[in-house]
Image (cartoon, rainbow, N blue to C red):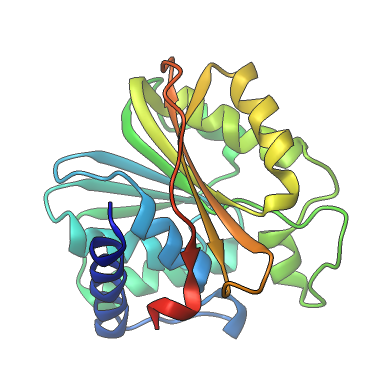
Length: 231
């Protein structure tokens, strides 16, 4: 998509978020740049069965429900308090096409059959060796002691995706090389990459990586996205 199309999509997502009533057990789980970036770059289509891994309080799934009203959307969240908040958010917003499950991604086979999803999305844990949040619940949601957690997310995406369907993960640039290794191991071929910057004078903050199950070699790196320009 070109710059104007991308900016219009961001503005639409922003309007949807402003229309949604959200409850969270702490201020650290409300929408962020990463949430909007994930929605703006995800290749969703109306009628898709979509799964979000690590859905938190559910705001990405709820926003998606407004963008693709004929889709079925499922959120998977391991933290009980965030899962309960997501159920409350469904009720508060009268959403009918979203379901949430309190589940570790490692247990995905207990609820979902293989190759059931048209799209898998996630903003998975991405702070590994650097500075971690001092808030306990945020540490669980956004950090991990090693890259095994990321590998679990990628394997879950492989298990859920139908053949040739796409996934979209928003990750921190520091783990990009590791993510490429895990994708290859699971026959998930990178197709598109969007790189997000605060502004033109800053290092990259986020990467949106779109991959295809058993896909071909068609990797495209799109023009940079400057978050300050989208305000």
